[in-house]
Image 1: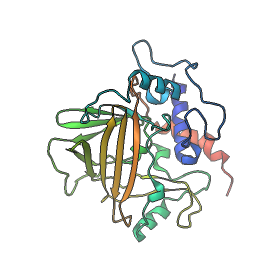
Image 2: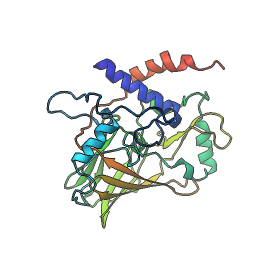
Image 3: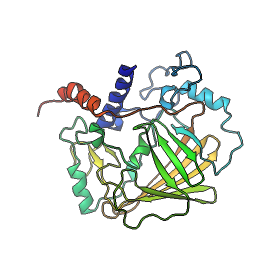
Image 4: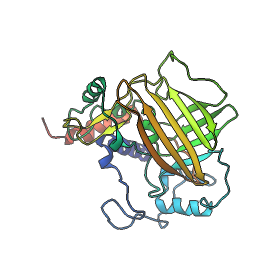
Length: 307
């Protein structure tokens, strides 16, 4: 069992390091990215911890996810627009997609300071993202955890909304008790300080106070003359706004806006839709530094061409 967990960990870390081209791309349901034979279906046994336990979101293949959504009648089932509860992952076009990618095609131009940070993040090798903080299991930070999470879960409490994330087995508090964001957060946080409120049927989350060691997203393609992969940076002055709207029982729309005038010349906006995955429950998926470092030392680095 431990070997299975380590295999899952190092594969995930490798996909992160290699960038989005190494992971599954958007594709038609039932097909791989290069139109190979259909994906595995219900003929593959579903593995759970035991009787009464449910599979984790990324433990189900597309066929099981479709079957669960059909049984739950997610498209026509009545719903409360102010209840975001549930486990969310994938999107309507591909239930197996992990997280909601940042819209890197719309990334604004860097400021001179932002360009300097971006260049400092460039990999030492064109084959992989050697400077990605996740390589040594540093926290992904926000909103990168939204782009790669193995599923997340909203739990609504009287004074806050909890957002649990499988990757890293962590959570964030979104306070709804009327408090305001701290004007000068005393300690930067990877997940920031977050407050939420309802505007009609849209749940609006505002956050600040971020630790600037995290990346917003991987930058696989050359940009600004870069010849190696890099990562999109941010400063500790970054502010993030998230607007969640439950379109129906089974669909959740998110518009995410990053405002960081110290690094970007304009706000960076990403919009996407994620899907409810009923009959699943989050599992434990830690990034273990010793496992990740050992895997890269033994498998990734030796395969790179010598400079």
